[in-house]
Length: 233
Image (cartoon, rainbow, N blue to C red; front, side, top):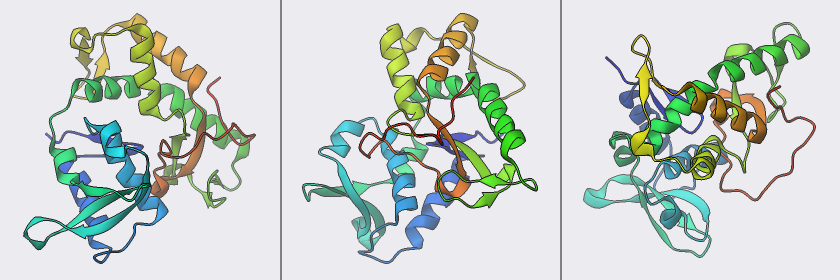
């Protein structure tokens, strides 16, 4: 049975699908080329699940480019704002065993699925014209299936989960999970599930954006809330 995997706002049906996605990005550039803004976002999502994320980001990421790694193979290379750089292996990040945080994060995502679906449906009901609404990033009119609910920085979903763990002083070793019909892990503690939903409702700043954008803006400066932003009622 295939195991779904989440990387940022991207949802893949399997590790193989995720590997093919990032391989496609890698092969779409020549050696030395700099990744565009959309692919920057996709690569930065890999850093968010890196066990040494802060060390890798350092003073800040200026851009990603294509370099040559061992055995003369193409690889992603992160370049920091101070000019230092190093390779980033997408295969190691995707193939790594799930750590405690990733497992808890997936369960938290399950806890808010109904809220996100209701938000998206409500927005379409109020704003759709001929079955389409504007992407709140590009302004393109798109269908329900072409849009994702995106967490705007600074409160990306990973940041919200991380802060919740800190505030609640949770020991992730002691978290219990349950699985329904072979689906993703869910929080077994109903009170904890409710507490996270309420915390997410308070902190999340959301937008409907084109699926391909897969926005994850944790690397940018803080952006103030605007009239376009959505919140869970």
